[in-house]
Amino acid sequence: MLDEKGRLFGLVNIIDLAVVLVFGLVLAFGAYKFLYVNPSYQPEPKTVRVELVVEGVRQPTVDAIALGDRVYEKNSNGYFGTITDIKVVPAKEVVPTADGKLVEAEVPGRYDIYLTLESPAEVSEEYIQITGQQVRIGLTPTIRTRTYQVETVVFGLEVLD
Picture 1: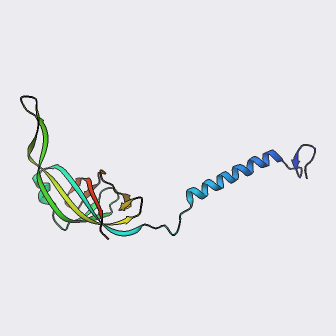
Picture 2 (picture 1 turned 45 degrees about the vertical axis):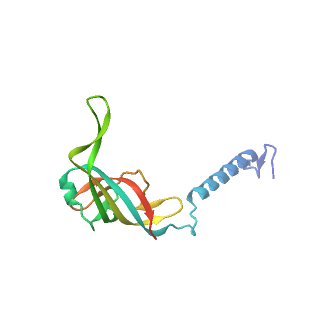
Picture 3 (picture 1 turned 90 degrees about the horizontal axis):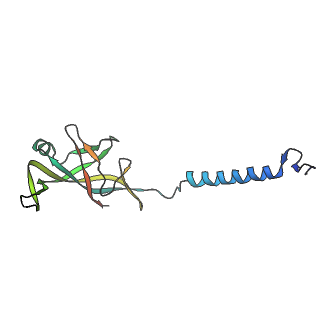
């Protein structure tokens, strides 16, 4: 089996063979861990209530957004949800007074819009995914319809069913 030069069957050095086998095992284990998908672990399709805020928009944008609008996410062009509630409030910002204090004041002609959407989503223990993208409080999806497009901030998520 081993010749006088330490080659197995006169073809390959035994140490070289051991290194190649260890490298192959490490590569196979890494591929298994990276590529294996547990078939029993599937996210469930659910309906999710998503609360969004659109900040500092003008009256034409307020007028364009309506209950029942089907909105789409800008980047994926996927269906993001249907607007089920709208609340419009005057936009406010913090401004300094003459004596150096900071006060909150309304911004003339600007509004904040609070939107509630019902969205189809994939829900797992680790994430909520709408249109193939994970959605979390604090993220900033851009939503659009045929007539408007607005940048939003997610401030609420609730799984409904």
